[in-house]
Length: 164
Length: 334
Image (tube, rainbow over all chains, first blue to last red; front, side, top):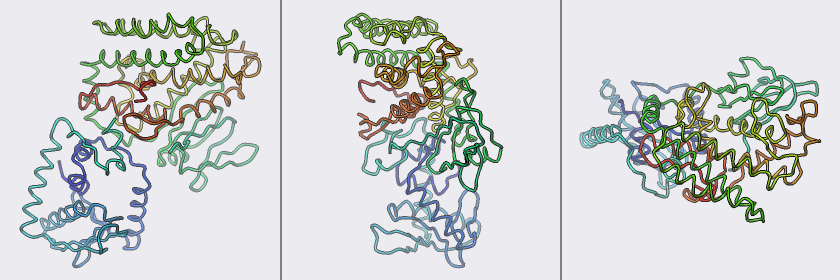
């Protein structure tokens, strides 16, 4: 299975969600936040004149001369976004395109900056490959990992499935 | 949360796409239906529409349920499947082959338990004649279901449960609503008309709920998948019939909000609800199915309607993870 941005971010958010989504049990999320996220995506797309590009199975928000730009609604899960961008940089590098990563948060809750920069180096590239391997292992299991309740579960579209 | 996403159309007319909203047009003029918070559209009368309209509601994720003039269900149009999982379909089929009886038993057990709860209310209010039926539901049914049974035997027990339930109506319903015999297609008296209409509404609600999961609508466990309908909806709706359909009926009849002479079609021997009767019934049905309460396990407020979807999730969990399948129980609120 090809690992895309969604799967790598779910790896950091929740392993149960990762398994369910990868095994095609993706539950509908009708939440307001998701809707806002989609609209922001559309607005930005228009601004940058449809600069979204698809390479293999990944979708990149924006590619400039120096940067690969990922736009997110909020900075609620920076670790997940970081690795998502690193995956994109890695995929680009394989195609012979080298860029730095730039993450723009439209709303900020936790961090003090709205824009973050990141580079793919030897250390995190190795770690990335290791993460990809771990994702493969999880999604190839017969059953999903047992969900453990955390506060963030309350907001998740998978909450009812996990805890029923 | 308890937003009502269902719209009913009772009159004849035309459904159209008008810009980005749904317009219903008849001789009285145009009525606009907001697309944003509509999930289901029920057409209870002759309505025309074109493919442009169907494409529009399909993209908005709206299910359209069609009924003919007599209130019989004709069919549903639902958006092309967004949630399809080949993997789950395969597992669901395997589950049918290997575990059909386990699931069928769980459903029948839930029917008995929820009928027990429904009747117990009347027992507590002085209808002591119900004692025998209640004891039978509580003790005997459980004992039967513990045995090694074939699907025919399980279906026989199910039939017995319903027929004893109908028999007990004479103890607490007004005379003109007592059921002599359950008759379907077409029903031949007022109570049968209510049961048929209510069951159909619940069936369509269940279709919409299952559509929000990855379950395959045609692979069922208690009912035979050969029935050529969305038989999984028949399965999943069973546990909810006593608490949604019958409680609505008992309430309307008991409070005399539905009366044989006023709300049934006289020319058809009172065997069909008239338009006003349908409206009263649907209104009460919607209120009931959207009633919210605290879900004991999820620890959040939920409605009976959402619980139908949750039973779908439970079934997926059984199919994928082998977790015990137990349909919704009114008493435990899970």
